[in-house]
Amino acid sequence: MVSEASFQGNLDPEVTRSFISTFHGYGNLDAPTWFIGMEEAGGELDEIRLRLATWYRRGKKPVEDVADYHLALADVMPHLGRNFRADRPVIQRTWRGLMVLALALRGRSYQREDLRSFQRNEWGRAGGGELLLELLPLPSPSTSHWYYGALENLSELSDRKRYKAELTPKRVETIRQLIRQHEPKFVVFYGTSYIEHWQDVAGTRFEDKRHLPPARFGYAEAGATRYLSIPHPTYTGLNTAYFAGLGGFLKDTA
Image (tube, rainbow, N blue to C red; front, side):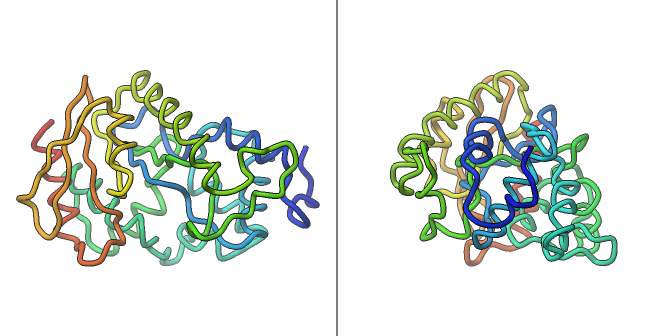
C-alpha cells in the first residue's frame, strides 16, 4: 500500500503507472451524459502526488465519485475540498458552463445557487447522471508543466510530447470502447483544438453548427449517441445563454 511518505519526495512510479492504465474519470459509467476534456488540472508537484496516492489508497477505482475523492484530498490539503464543502461551495470555473448545459438538458434551473447545489450533491457522483472523462490521464497545472519525466522505467513519460504521442491513441481507443459498451445518450467534448481526436472517438465527423451565438459547435450522431464538440468552457466570450442553448439543443434531439 502507498503510505504517507508518498506525499513527500518524488512521484511513485507504481502509482503513476497504475493511474495511467486504470483510471478513467469521475461519476457514473452508466450516466446518460458524458463530458470529455483534454486533461485534469492539477497544482504543483505535492498536489499531484497527493491526487495519485489518494486514488491508489482508495482502491484504484476506474471511476471515482468526484466529491468523495476531493473531500478525501482535503484531509491533507483543505483547499482541494472547497468545491464540495457544505457551506457555499466554490463553483469550479471549467465545470460551470458544463453544469449549466447539464441542467438545461434536464430542464432544470441553472441559477448560481442551483449550480452550487448541483456541484456539491450531484455532479460527477457515483450514482449520478454525468460522467467526467479526460483524453489524457495525468493531472497537470498547464501544458507548459511536466513533472513525470524523471520516473524510472516509464520512458513514455520522458517529456510531454512523447507522452501525448504514445498515450493519446490508447486513450482514444479506451474511451471509444467505453462508449460502445455503455451507450450514453450524449457525449460532450470540450476543447476544439482536439477535434480530430474527438472525431476518432466518435467514429464520425462533426457537422459545423453556427446558429447558436456566441460560438459555433460541432454535432454528430453515431449509433445511439449524440455528440457535441464545443470550445473549452473558459474560452473568452462564452456565456450562460450559450451553454443553456447547448443543453436545449441536445434536449430537442432526444
